[in-house]
Length: 279
Image (cartoon, rainbow, N blue to C red):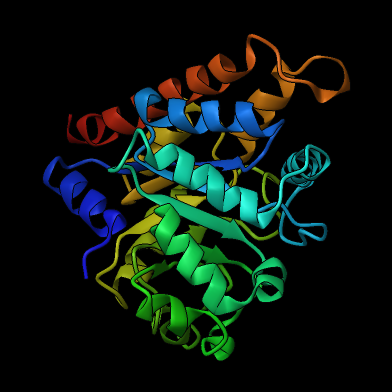
């Protein structure tokens, strides 16, 4: 079964360019504005959209994304409403791949079968669940694959060649390479090592490899886009949103455009990457 994610990466391969994968927290800073932001992302140049499922204990997230999750929870966001956000987005966009990213607890509470049925019906294409290792694939990964959803796994600089095959066994859609150790937004990665790391992962899989954590600028996106199949940006987008907010973290007239403007810059960087490398 070919998903929207598979189709998008295949299309971009024929165009010889990397994908821009953008992360936003579902429900941040409020549910209507969040929907407007998600709708604006493809027009600004996003190729794949990751939507965070807000959770009270986001252990892999840095301060910016933790704060975004808290804003969303305070605005009344739930897992059920996150799925509705995707369904509302799908009314006007049936092509852009959507990945839900977060933690297993809210899915477990809803019930795996109920969640997967609802995710599929809403138009979700893939899942990144950061606290479920390959040893727990029976919990969610295998049922998700059976339901026709991609299950995207994270690889890190500490994932050695012995561990990598386990990480990749049931991975589909793409591999998300975390280019530094630590939490999201923690530091600037050493971009000179990205190409070698991507090549090492590709020695074990035919899947596209998208690189994230620490990508904040168009120049960084261009550098990584020349070496990987995708560039993932999250913290910088969440920070642009946060910096546009008014008192009490309320959305302003500038909020949607603040996100869209940064995504346009990042998209320009990604789209020029292979061209710059060839020159």
